Image 1: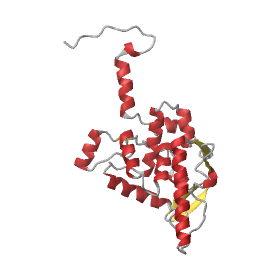
Image 2 (image 1 turned 30 degrees about the vertical axis):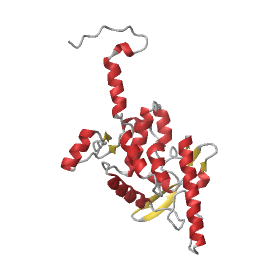
Image 3 (image 1 turned 45 degrees about the horizontal axis):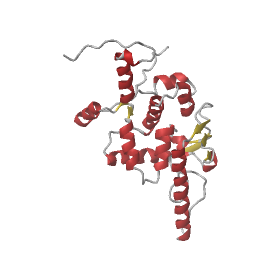
Image 4 (image 1 turned 90 degrees about the horizontal axis):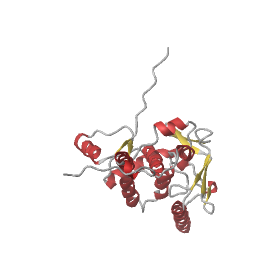
Length: 249
């Protein structure tokens, strides 16, 4: 028996109209993407959160939940501005399993800009300070080597990240998104910044470029308006002669 292909839901941006409909009806897209302004508002709200660097990496560099949970300091070169994805922490029920990334393509190098490097340096400093405080108070604190840990120094359960994000989004008063939706947003932002699809595919660790093109890139409103404006004003295109415009009268 041959089953028909399953229709994949497409990401939808939280425009003002869509937010208003959600508030009125409670209905939300299956895959929702924040606008750049909404993401900036969220990152500003969680600036003091102990997992700020994790939200930053997923939202702007497109790491998967399991990849962020399994990230270790040995995988990050802050001097060269590079992060290596070599493992992930996934769940089966409540049990956590640590192993290689999702696919061969998922094992990748992710470039880090100066701001991201600074965010990670601050994360390492806060982690070291917390460990020193606990040890000074006679409390247990493991030196596990993971970038994101619980107060006792052990790696976080991936499920906790999902619950924590849901709570923070609600407190920030922003329209709801899933943790994986931040990854969609990272692709959309990279696309809006004129990154080519192949570069975005490598950044996200997709084995198939069609997945990147068809599912993970949503044209954000400012970029869509820019394209629409250029399409209706051919005189703005380089190499074309200006056309006379009809007067407003």
